[in-house]
Picture 1 (spheres, rainbow, N blue to C red):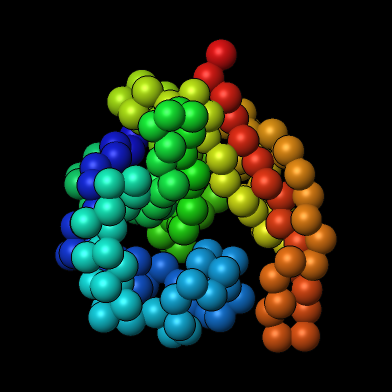
Picture 2 (tube, rainbow, N blue to C red):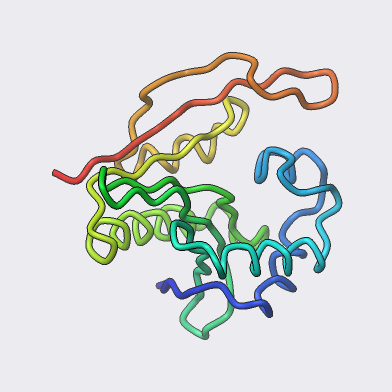
Length: 167
């Protein structure tokens, strides 16, 4: 079982250990940070969103209270009742154990029940099949596919724009 809580600066130490390589890093943040990720970058990220009314950094914790996942809710639109999820990552030691599905289920529940949103969106690169499947398993559907929108070294990655709506 996991729970969600607001991100704390101390969570950054965990997050730094979840990304071992540049490909994983780029899939996680689409190069919105500079590789390799540093404590200073995470502190700036935290302080920027601490002042933001339309964005929330969240941490998933296990039964013992240890961080096991991370995501950002941003672009909260209180008139259109929508929010976008990004920077989704699970502790590398916990991947494949259902933590991602549980975290994303809780994220959608939080958006619908706490934030009173009617729509949650996200984007996932086409070469991240595991994440794409995870999002589908919690109700997200592909709304649009954009080919070759992100350049990683000598590769072009496409992105699936996905959404789930409150019924």
